Length: 152
View 1 (cartoon, rainbow, N blue to C red):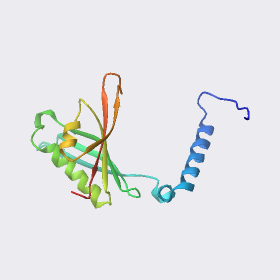
View 2: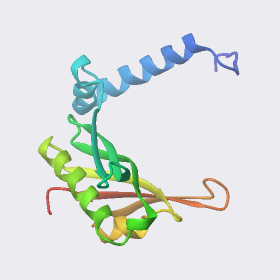
View 3: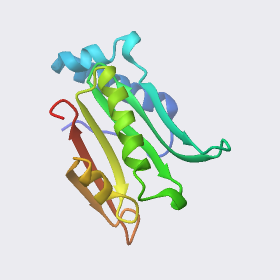
View 4: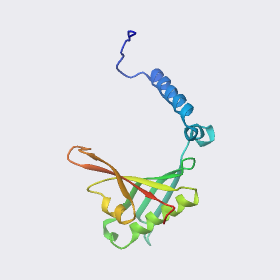
């Protein structure tokens, strides 16, 4: 076996080389990856839905991004003011974001949420759990959920 020098610590140049090598390898093995890394497809598209009260105050919102090439909507942030929870606003925001994702060609949606946030809300909306990270952060559980947007 050849001898190697292991180098620990930050090195932006080596990190860039590492990423370039991984992308080249992945592109050589997958046409989906090849298409995703075309210059026109490098950035995801933001999608946002907000709910404002009569006075213009933010009452809730749902923010995500669309990966058109791979047909995914990723939900990054969702929040509903405690004073209006349980009145259907969360469902309306989520449906609106999903509809926008569908209109942009998304077939699936995914979201991560903690046990103290909204895993049951997403399950009731048709999301299914595909992963769990326990003790992330320590003492908490992070859920990974996805939904088929086409079979709706």
